[in-house]
Length: 173
Image (cartoon, rainbow, N blue to C red):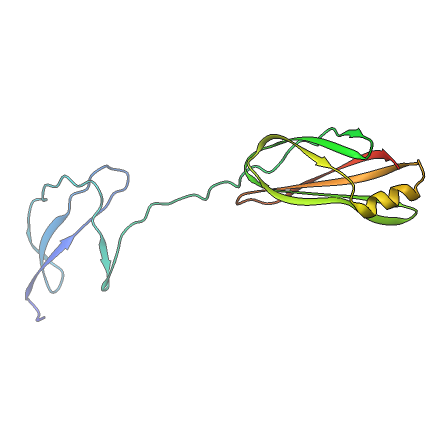
């Protein structure tokens, strides 16, 4: 470019508060002095045209806010005990993974009573906890005494963080 040479430049001013903004075409000389101003072009497109910075075009992107995490809390269930079988009614807020682990302490030793993990749909349901072979043997050693079973219920919603509740239930050995 030489001094005094005329160049056509298309200027686009975007005002995000207004619905439409029309581009303005101007002819300027090399020193930047306007020479001819043309009336704005009529356009039906309300989206701002891409602007260029150097050789890479940039387009304004919509701002998205992240989704809040899914709910993971549930009420502590009221357990029903029949013999050594424990039934826990649950109401879960949605689909996810449910893990249940139960332990007992007999004569100073902690023994696994029950454990399971499975995918659930959510809503109302029940979990039945029954003792395994080692827990049954430990309960026999208790000889008719009442033993406390700690049942830990953990719910992890799809795409969320885990939440746990622990319920203590007494069973007769």
